[in-house]
Length: 88
Image (cartoon, rainbow, N blue to C red; front, side):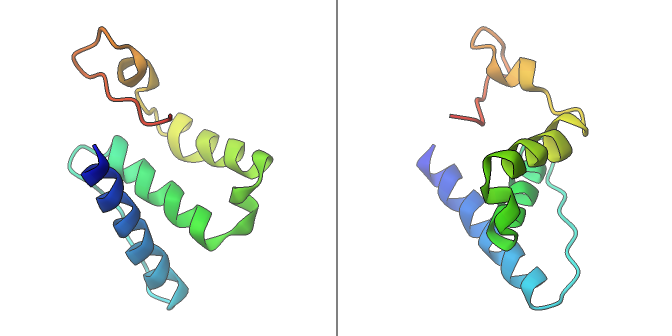
């Protein structure tokens, strides 16, 4: 679990550095549901102080998770075979 957190944070740092350096970035992970949204959101949190506020974080979750159809129900239901909480 901690290895996943470490790799996600490392990826967000690389993403933020690339964007900050002026490079375009495309984020797409294997299935496009979890890591894609996680990396994109974390990168934006690192780059833009607005997303570090309560309202900014709420907007980020709406924009990068809800609007793209993230499977919160499946990920949050401990009885589901796809249980994998991403918000602790």
